[in-house]
Image 1 (cartoon, helix red, strand yellow):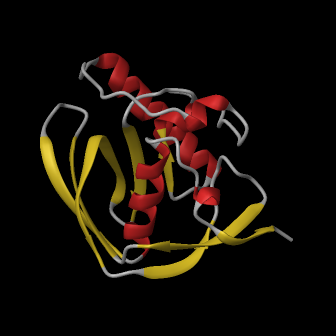
Image 2 (cartoon, rainbow, N blue to C red):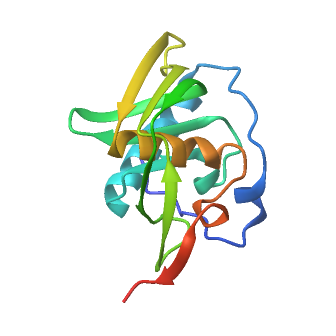
Image 3 (tube, rainbow, N blue to C red):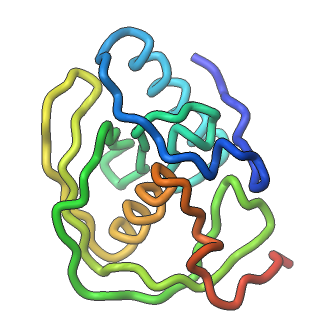
Length: 151
């Protein structure tokens, strides 16, 4: 397992639309393990594959119960709204206010190719929406009001 470099804004990979995962194999498991190590090292809430230079539809989210892996996720529905501060491991030193859903329901696959549904509320809904956007080449700065430097 390894800590991967996190790409920063300006890198063209962060703006690419990611491709679906087609092989659920040892390489995928190794990538997911490395992403977990990288997320833990960076002390972030979530990490998408393009942030580590892989243009696949994969992201992970840190929850109270551990890290949840989302492969080929599809948002089934959203409800409510919330407005709050966001940052990003790929946009170091900046914060911005972003409007996100208060509840997000996602269908995805785990590392073994098993389909599951996941419902995130409040902060988790924000994190799910943020990481999902990465898979379509969207950064939170595209949606943020009042982008500001960290002091």
